[in-house]
Image (tube, helix red, strand yellow):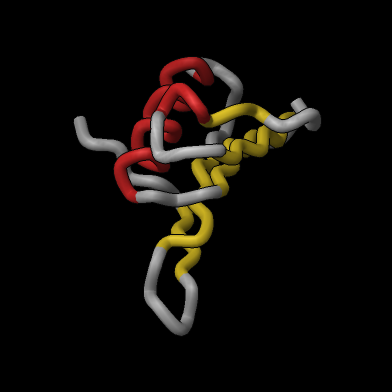
Length: 76
């Protein structure tokens, strides 16, 4: 099943994806969601990603277009 993020924010001037967010109602399968989010960010050249549940917010940003370079921020 293809990954379809819950929210995509684009730059109004270029229509380039500036941020993507995946919103989940619970924390189950976060590892799978994280992998899908990173793959999407890498494939679309999106520099910022969020993974959100009612109790958790994870912020991701990348240093290069490689999926392996996308790091989770300190928020956790």
